[in-house]
Length: 312
Image (cartoon, rainbow, N blue to C red):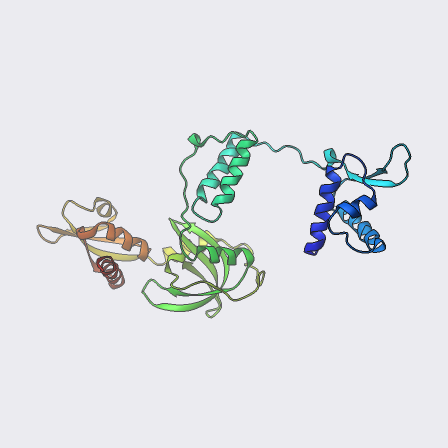
């Protein structure tokens, strides 16, 4: 259906809903935007529009335009039959709606979410924030908006991606889905060059995300398990870090360590397993001078590079 026809049907619906009496065709052609042709053309157009409204379930009523003289048929829409029943929410449903609005407070959905909450409160729905736990998904990754749009519209994209070992390569992807896992956003999709499914952490995209196809270009595989794909990736990528930690510091790291020994009067050495290079790098950086990375090489290099950037 063209935009012009959609607008004309909407205008016709609004006019027939608002009228308190039956409107003749002449009145409709005079008052409703969209009927600008010759009389015969308007008649044919109106007959098609009537059929379209009935197919859409609009309760179009035909009656006398003048109840005394009954000179000509008129038209209107039965407002009671057309109106939807009032929507109400239980306390639990209202809590879920409020929680969803909180989750998206950082992303482009924040304005629609706030608007929805205002409308619900205006309609009398009780939204008790006191019973909600704090839930918050950060969507501040620069690549998030374009990746999200590509997933929704099923469009191919391309970008540069930095692997765990620091190697950067160009990728062309059919994006199947996006998921937040352990505080980070991941993209799951088909790598067209490698002809296999791959998982990409959005924080490792090093270039702008470019669209390379029209919408609805492909279909994700049936039964796709996004969380399973991400967990499989992370479980297969566990590494062991050897760290020197200052005495009587880094309690959280020490609790997760599976081996510990004394280096000297100032330092202990621990071995700890990690599965996310970026997240573990950030954790170490927070501990500042209390941790020295011995190995693996990529972790040590990434911590040193981050410290140099901070110092500049």
